[in-house]
Length: 268
Image (cartoon, rainbow, N blue to C red; front, side):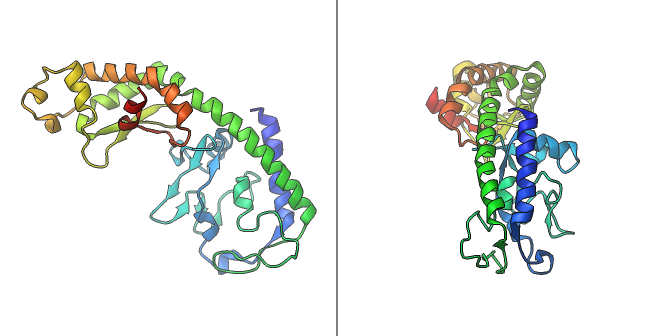
């Protein structure tokens, strides 16, 4: 993605939508319901949020359309960019607000100029149809650029996996993890990490039986008591991931960066 072209699109879109729609004073009406939608963003925008102090790397998870999703707090039902003090989005006036957020709940078409209902109140309306239509075209171009970036980012997973520091980090995490707690791996901002099981997992037991069948925890049938994944099994897992991840990702674009072994094994 060409950086200057991307920023031209985002900044112009933000400016157009600022003057294309108007609405009620949300601060005194609702509880930031428009911040309750889940949004995908490109990495280039995520980087800018980090640079400007709005976010940290952990605020982004791998997306299923663009490179990342904004972290969503399920307990609060809000995007992490929601600011309780202003009852709205932290980046609303920054010129970098995600384009998808602008069109909720107005969309781009309101030929009768009626108020468009939000979750709690009427009052949103398009006041400049020309600017709204221009913004709509820009949004399609923005989506095109973001999808291009997402494809490149997905392909780079093997680069991340083969990176010495990332590989060493993954090895250390594996050695600290009981095999019964490992469900798979997940792709984070710039490294590969472990995907923990919700409870107990027997996914690694077959691997251990195949490559380390003399292990004391297998001989005594105490697999669930094993405190950590041994170096021998860690090496086999990393070799396995390097061989299979690229093809798996091609056929599973909706993974959101999580790769459970139960699914990876089916694509072996």
